[in-house]
Length: 201
Image (tube, rainbow, N blue to C red; front, top):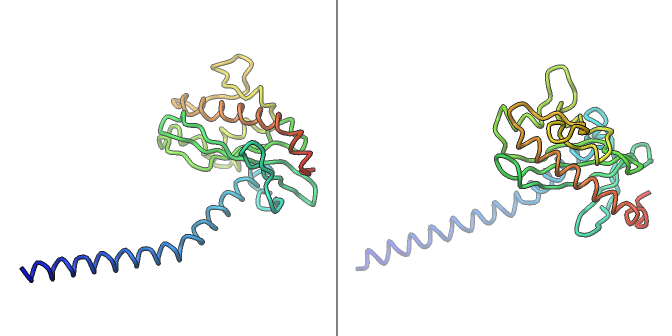
């Protein structure tokens, strides 16, 4: 009987030590992981506002403006407002949720650019939504949104007046990304007066 007690004690001790070690490791790496994630998102916000080349030059105000639970990040180039970026998630992707970073221009009238932060879409199909073709500097699907008004962000196959070509064999992904961009960009325009009131000028 003693042998079983000893083995149980040793197992319990081993589990306790392992759990403690994991807790210490998690605590030590959590802040760095969070910092890396924030850095990645900051770069994507900058690229959405000013493009692949100038994205890292965009400086964001220290504190985002929060309206209705959504955070809006005002980005500046040479001290002047270059645009406002924010994130949105759609659960209508083919493989699961798609998180996008949307940026509006300084006036708030047009979409400045879009980046995809995360997705689980099919490689070679829906995943091509973030693909940069050889010789180009911007994701070919996302660049279609640059400079258009939110109401024009519709797939051509869904609306003859739409401005967006769908990704070949990935209509569900194309529609999910396009719809969330249109909806969230439209919501931004409604929040713009309050954004300006809160000093984002």
